[in-house]
Every structure is written in structure tokens, then in C-alpha cells.
Length: 74
Length: 234
Image (cartoon, rainbow over all chains, first blue to last red; front, side, top):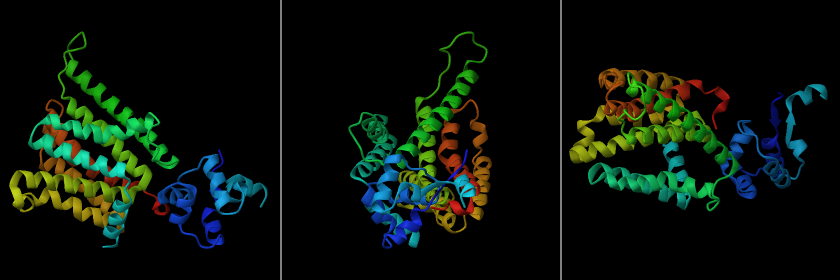
């Protein structure tokens, strides 16, 4: 089972240096949840992933990727 | 000092439900210990009320990460509580041919379920360091409360060996998790032998109760800190 990698932290900075708390407020979760997603400790639902992508002005595929996909398409 | 400020900030962000729950749990424990065990109803409402309302769909105050941590904690409480009660039932019924001979205080079973649930939830949601910090502070205040109730304002001076290690290790656990983890495990072993907790096993439920509220949080926090990977701090 491939593990999942995410770029939430990078896109958060690219979207204007928004803080974890601001992002959390915008998508309706706690700051600890954003922190856990960024650390790869928690895999969000499709709904939350879509909300994150919308707020960070990107797509879900840009935010999240399977680790072995990177090996196939470097 | 920074950790204390963060904690105060987090307490301020506690939802009204969380605050009410905390107040009910504390009031239930104090009144149950000092006045009448019937007041434990406040504790039960504080612990199970919000969970029941969430399950019934009447309270929607948690996000999906919190719900996942709560489900995992519930499963672990079921597993540990179930194994614990099965083991006690078997031990108490040893030598009998039918069920119903065992006598066991329900408060102990309740303590196992609630303790496993909350220790597990805190570790899953906050990560080892923050969880250990909160667990140790909570138990430090819990023991301080009983020391004050028993000996009045001089309670802390009469029982510093029960109260102070929780507070000191709460603060060192954030900065030096490995060292604190080792110290916590060593301290839990010391408490086990110093307070003769082994004598409470398996026949005396009172001894088991002390193990649960003194030995278990120390050991659990120590193991959680040692198991934490360096990049897991959240």
C-alpha cells in the first residue's frame, strides 16, 4: 500500500503565507487537524481535501499524491 | 512559560461544551469524594453526555480528525476494558461452575474505560508530547485536589512526593521527551514498589484503583514519549 504525501504546507505559504489557524478557520476544522495533515499523521476525507484545495487555490491532485506515483513519473 | 501560555490559549479556545464537560467532571469527582457518591452523576453526564449527543447527531462540534481519534479511543477502551473485565471475571469465578459469583466494584470498570478512552484520545489527537504534558498536568491537579481535601492548605507540603513529579515532568516532557519518558517509566516503577501497589493485585480492587490513577498515567505517558518519532511532534 503506497503512502500518501502532501504539499499543504507549501501551498499555504504560496497562497499568501496564511497561518494554520487561518486555514483551519476557512475549512472548518481545528488547527491541530491542519498540523496533523501537514505532518502526514492524518489523511483527510475527500470532502476536506476538496475544501483545502479550494481555499489554497489549487487542485486535490496538486495537494496530495501517492508516494509511488512520484517514482513512476519523476 | 511558553508552554503554559499555549495551554492558557488553548483553554480559552475550549468550546462551551468542553468547558461544561470539564466543570461537571471536576464537580462530580469532588462532590462524590467529599459529600456523596450519588454526585458522580455529574461526572457521568460530563463524560458521556457530549459523546451521547454527538452519536445522536444533536451535537456537531468536532471535525473529522477529532472524530477519528474518538472512534479509535472508543475501540481501544472497548478492547482494554473488555480484556480487563474478562480477566477479572475469570479470576473471580475460578473454581465455580457458573457465572454470577464474582463481586467487583463497578467504579473500577468505569475508571478503566474512561482512562483508556481519554489517554488514547489525547495521544492520537495531540501527539505524544502535548498529550503527555496534558495528562501529567491533569493528574497533578487531580492529586493536588485530593491532597488539599485531605490535609487542607498544607496538603501540598504533606504529600509533595505524590503531586510534584506530575508537574515537573509535565514541563520537562515538552523539551526533553526521551529523558522524560525514561524518568516517567522509572518513576512509575518506583511508585509501584514504594506504594506497594502489587499487593492490590489481584484480590483487592482498592489497590487496582490506585494503580489506575497513579501508576498508569505515568507509565502510559513515558511509553508514549519514548515511542514518539522525532518528526512526529505536532
